[in-house]
Structures are given as structure tokens and as C-alpha cells.
Image (cartoon, rainbow, N blue to C red; front, side, top):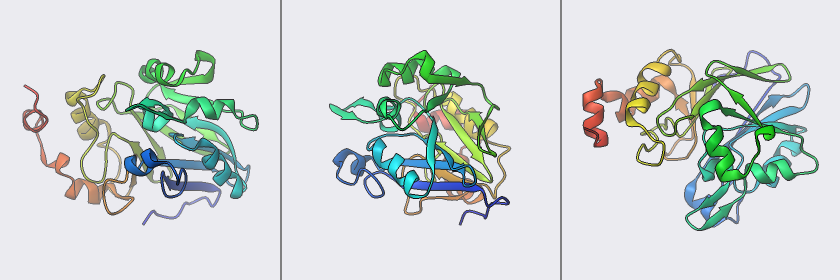
Length: 245
């Protein structure tokens, strides 16, 4: 279970597409994406992580909790996380969030991912806030630290907030993101998992970008013990598993 916040101001919700929102969307049900709401209960401001499918539902869910969406955090540019065209389907996302009259939000992206987000969503430079690894985004008094974890895409990033790691498609409870899609790089993903995330403590709770396991979250210690990607101690073994030479 996620540990309690030292500050009761933290607002954090994990929401499963096709179950908690976008319940009538067959693609959402098939893709089992997670979106997240992170905010400050005292100020009533929240950030939505990876807004996709039924964006209005996400804003309404925040509103029902007394929260107002004031921005978005993007793990990476794939349409099932930010909207756009995928497999012949049009998925709501960043564009629809920006168009809502009652939402004044900017989109926080890793610098190397801006090109992809703009390409698939139609967002403009003015809509985006570009970040480097180690930057923080503040919502009320809650700080979210951004960690650049390339590999699944060039600008994939994870978010650390109060003992939680929101990892997008960089790391799942079982397995990790694909590296055979445009911009993927298996060597970079290896270094992201074994070096860039190496300092994340074992008691940090991992929240992935998809429900690919029976459990929706687990500690990093448990994940490191059971996930096969951490049983490939060398780059050469990693390359054999992922088919690289």
C-alpha cells in the first residue's frame, strides 16, 4: 500500500481508463492506461498526468473532489497517453484539455519530447513548458520532481512525489516499455532503469502507465525483486533479451 503523506495536503488519485473514466470507450478498455491526479487539497489545484481518452471525465472527477485542473504532466508523447491518432482511432487528450473553457492549463514535458507531443496533439510551443531532468513542478505547496528516463521514447520522464514514482511506460510492475517503436532505444532504457532510477528508494511506491499486472502498484523494492528486467545485470544480457546486437 502507498505510504501516508507527511502532509495531508497531498491529493493523489490513480485512475484506470475504461473503468474509472472513459467507461464506454473500447480502446480505453483495451489499452488499460492509467492517468493520475496530483494536487494540493488546501489550494484545490491539481495536475493531471497523461490526460487521454475522456479528458472531460478526468476534469469532472477532480471537480467532484473539490479540485481544479491547473496543468498537465506528460510522461511521453504516445497517443494513448496524450491523445491523437492510433491504429485508426482518434483519442482525446492534450488538445481537448487545452480547449476546455474552464481549464487554464499548460503542458509540462521533457525537452526532448516536445517535438513528439506537438506532432501528435497539435499543441503549440506556447502550450508547453519544457523541462530538464531534476526540475520540479509545484502545484500549491506540493512539489513534483521530474526524472528524465529515455529509452521507451527520447524524452520519457517519470515523476516523484511524496514517496511515489509515476513511471509512465518506462517501468511496469512486470516488464518495461517497448523500445522497437520510433525513438525507442534499448540501451538508453537499460541505463534509465539501472542508473537513472537507481537512487529511488525501495520503499517508494511505483505507479505505472498501464495495468499490466494484477496489482495496480507496488513498492520499488518488490518490483526490483520480481521484475525480470532487474535480473539482467549487464548491458550484453539486456541486448540479448531485447534482440539488439
